[in-house]
Length: 555
Image 1: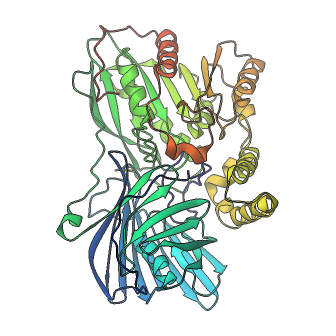
Image 2: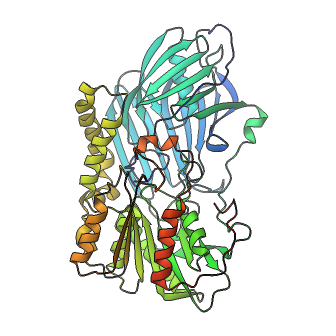
């Protein structure tokens, strides 16, 4: 439901959020006649950097020595993917990939690894995660190239296929989901190539040898820059800052939580200063896909929903525990579990808070966003000691119904698909889903889980928050949640639908997920945060400390 960069195939939680298309004008590029393109036998280390304004979204390192090709794709708060491949000219014969948790140290083991091998007209992918092994086979056209999101080392192989031609269509196999698609390359000028695939367009500046030297992803204005030589090695994405901003009336403490399954979860506990007695507290629950404790989404500038929640509540005298999902930073555990398994992780977080002498065990609430809004009622229905829950864009429908809408909405909103091809595109998308991502444990649970019977058993006070333009969890689900809670006998239900807010609770009059990359700010506004904080402070009986000016960093 909430987007994070896509990882290789279907062994973790599937993504139900569409990746936004991206854009703007191209910076100046080198001049000179474009020669027939060939992939160099050896290349110095190169780093491609994708930015939006001053924010670095992706760092992609790549190099080649003979037939050996290596590439690494990293993004703040997202898994890091390392690819090694055996090339023959501009073709890939075989490929290995390893996936590491965000912020994992160099000596860390991958949380997932896999291979891709081309044999005749088949592509065979084998993925290992924990003790699970998944093997997929696809029939592919001759010359199919593998595709990894934001890997411009692999995209240079696409450009090399253009050669001296004006246009070429190249078949692709996406490592994410093992889906087949194609890329169309068009020579726009002697030093510019347009690349279109999956409804997105990149305008690439190329040099005389066909190397990508820069460009723009259209239409949201993400810039691509190339850095070669020694400077390339100095470009890095550091660990996010999870601490308290300067002058905050609370402190932030790094914590680890051990679960009954035996794995550890890493996180941050913010503790307000100057309070009297034990503090009320909140545990946050992220949306689908592997998320860090802030629920950081790199494609939207500065979107860190739960960092903002922790800051807002910390200034109202409420402690907040926010945890990394399995496989993120130092959190362990099997990433292939279901929402019920992840609910057990949150239950461990609640149990941890009850051991802290600063926390009042009778005043602990949950705040869940998206999938987190599905998990919170599961816990509340089975733990009467919880004081309250907040559902931010939580679902009322089964996953099957939600995905049916999202598939139709995806195709309807994709302007690259002509009207008389949309039905066929929808059938293809569903077939690809059924053969790949529809088989995982998380997706099987999600497709069949009905939230309404669980909601009928919730007796704690509930705040239901919803964006009116949400095109992922549609807004009519919020009043259905409220009616279901009341039908079960719960009279302490409050609902608030915010006009012009999308699934991320950002101002967005359209709300189409494909447009998220065009959003200019990821800061959730004071109306949403104030509603959340006021309700929790009143429900949990929080004492409001002396106001402290909100610093620029805390925003």
